[in-house]
Image (tube, rainbow over all chains, first blue to last red; front, side, top):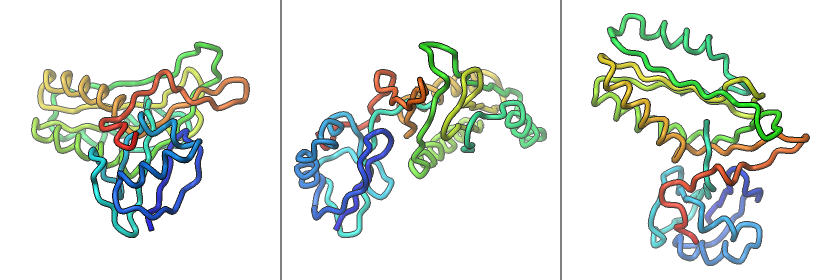
Length: 73
Length: 144
């Protein structure tokens, strides 16, 4: 089981999903009408490490963070 | 790196940083202060922060600055911050001014682009995500 958390303004509570790669997770999240519009502009971290490739594998217990566009300062 | 609830006490924090480095033999201290302007009818701004990744981002800058004999410091607000007060300050200390001037520019620009902080306008009692001023982080769209 993977835990997915949606940071900042996305406004969705954490989800628990079964997925073995980011590719699979993408397919699942694209079916969620609240989350889907954020995906093409959000960055992704696994266990607080930023990831750049959709073929990154996931393992049981991983925590995936979805980070929408930022504006500090 | 320091996170405070609400507006920053700029004088206190800069005073503390100067005291911390008073005997470090740095010849240059270049501060940056971000102050919230009264514009577009806002009462202030509000911030969400994801601290674990912010800390890693900042730690990367500590290492980068160290290679040039410099150090970076920053403080940021969490939650609501009123207009005419500060939500972000940073500084570079270095042996000579040129490195500090260049580093503070790079550091603040990278901060704006890649620090995991989300900004909201406080207007008419509402908290509105500043979408048009926000920037996708490096690698954004991997799930899109």
